[in-house]
Length: 297
View (spheres, one colour):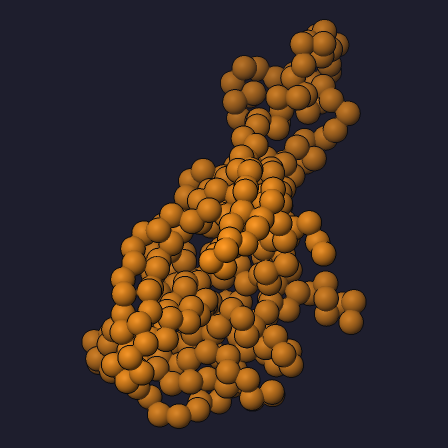
């Protein structure tokens, strides 16, 4: 078993409430929580009453260091006078990689590991994913930003756990950027039927295009919202009962290829609402079709 499965995150409970289903009489505790700190399980055991317990170690993230810090060693100061490259103090502020000529590596190598530059590149990719990117509330810290991206990418649990094992935010950002650039299409996880293009993804809230929603039976659905979907058909009639989006009626979506449940179509029952319709795809039912996978197959 992979060592990644011994990792997880602590959760801060934001709200909770007890709900009872009038038809079945079943009582459910609904909890909304947000991940906070990575941890590694040191040991685990089961109590006499059946509750699983664990001893954990919090895994702090390494700070995002200046990429040129290691290059600007005091021992390299003697080389400054011998260099044929001439720059003034003002030029140094214009080019943050002006130190590169004193090292064995060109400046483009250092750009690959600049956290702020990686954040900027990811934001450029995200603008292609959602046309309302400007309305999103994004963390400015590169470390927190890397976790926001990981939570909104359509990743399987194995890859998410692998990202949790990264101690360096730069490594996490580089991995996320590679996935964003490689993904163009969202497909059914069971039969690879195309569901949506990445340009169809948009956000219904400031937190991002993906969210967690709880049904009346306490089951949590992680869902990503898209403006249009293909390779699906509607099952049943529209209903506004327990709708996650007030003013919208939902209809079950099933895959046209394997007939699995893949999400819901939401249609505005209030004529003043925009958009008039959109689709919600379950994260558990879809996957990103990466170009590297298609080339290898």
